Length: 127
Image (tube, rainbow, N blue to C red; front, top):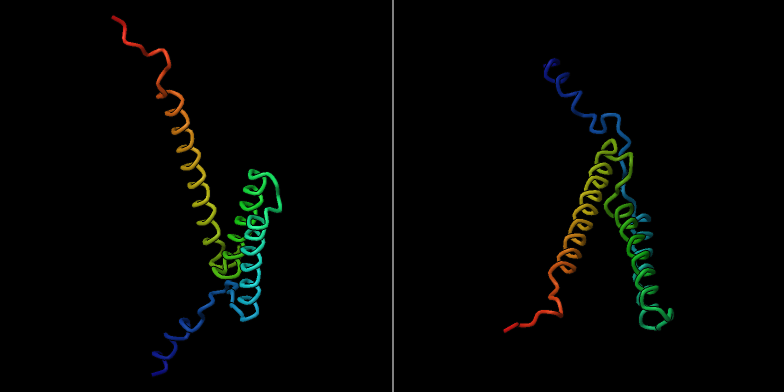
């Protein structure tokens, strides 16, 4: 009977020495408030026409969006370098690199197709 009990002792340690992240109510409230703020400010910028230039407004909104992505990853997805020995963060970085490569390649291909496939203005039917 003692041998059966000893075989289960090593399964009780669920942490395996890792620093586990434990979500708190305070963390969720902070994440929610930051998310609301990071949504409301760009909405106000657009609706109030605070910035005169549409390009500058778009750049500011993209900046707010990037910050909001980080807030969601930290406060709601609990991603940091300590969770799962950093593997979740490494997977995120790898995914980000792949997305950047695919987007840059797609934009490059579309630009060159647009530049090379445009009809010329000299196309006349000659008798």
